[in-house]
Image (cartoon, rainbow, N blue to C red):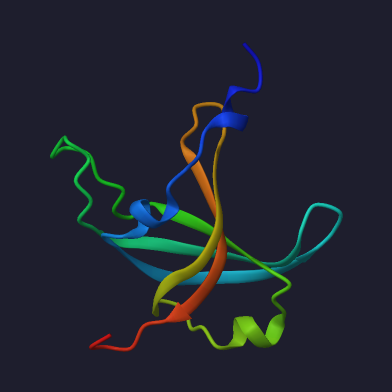
Amino acid sequence: MKKLRNFLKFDSNAFLKDKTLMYLEGKIQDDDHFKGAKITTLIIDDRTDYGDDSISNQYEKLSIKVPNANEDYLRQFKRNEEVRVIDVSEGKVWGDYGNNLTITGKLIKINKGQ
């Protein structure tokens, strides 16, 4: 069957719930496919229960797309700074093996104690 992934819904909030993310880099994209910032984060801690203790996404990169973001938006983030994804509008699993993920939302900085 074709286009089965069109009917899968990814629960981004549940996926992100027990993870700590670190900002790596961000770039502005402005083309026919997307206008905004594409941000690369790193999962530095993963306490998610996958039902198998040998499974973890720690140290995996995670792409965040922030629609309509500009250079000023990106300047607020520094490399290796802890961040959190908020206002998630979409989580898209992609790739030949369904092992890539892009989340559309916003990023905020996390201050110690938050």
